[in-house]
Length: 240
Image (cartoon, rainbow, N blue to C red; front, top):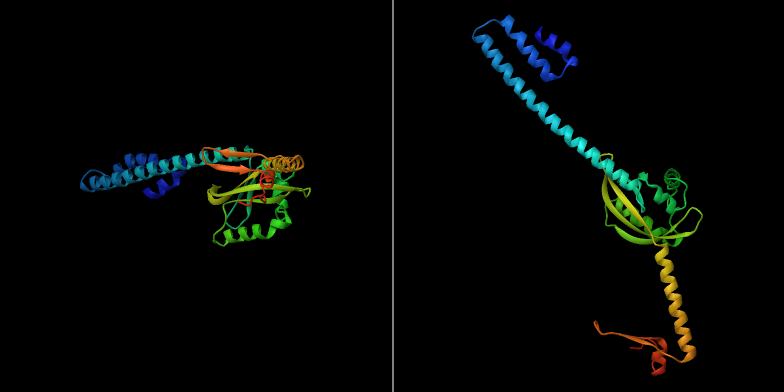
């Protein structure tokens, strides 16, 4: 009867509060004496263990709240990052992509970008498609796979997009996941191309003018001769 009464009212207050109140009226019908004293002692012991359990639950709740707060800050960082970021689970199912990633590949929104990924290799240039897909499959099977690599991607309009990708482990919705971070290399590639063109133009001008140039790094001892310097001195370019 006592337990039924307590169970019937347990939803109205916490376990600890209910047991404290139960302890006060439970001693009356039992009367005084050794039986009542022994029961009360046992009851208080049980109550102490429940209070300790409640404390552990509060500590656990605080840890969960802290983790949720940390994940929220991480999500805000990812969503507002200037780099392209994509999250997927161990099976390769895409869970999230930020707007920077969608914009990088020429899509209007992250949702459109994720939908387009349903076609394997659609965002990889044909000449890089096989080895990139093989690398992805190796990772899914638990085999060795590259975590830092470059390749030519393919934008929505078909234009080539040179990117560098960093792959690392993360947590998403409380579960293990993979984060892919994309860096657009377009500006670097254009600068490298421009430098190569300048070097080629200089080499042609020196050849026409029969002029050579050389550089010496006195710190490392490295010596550089232009192609025309080799020719002027009677050697083939890069002969030694």
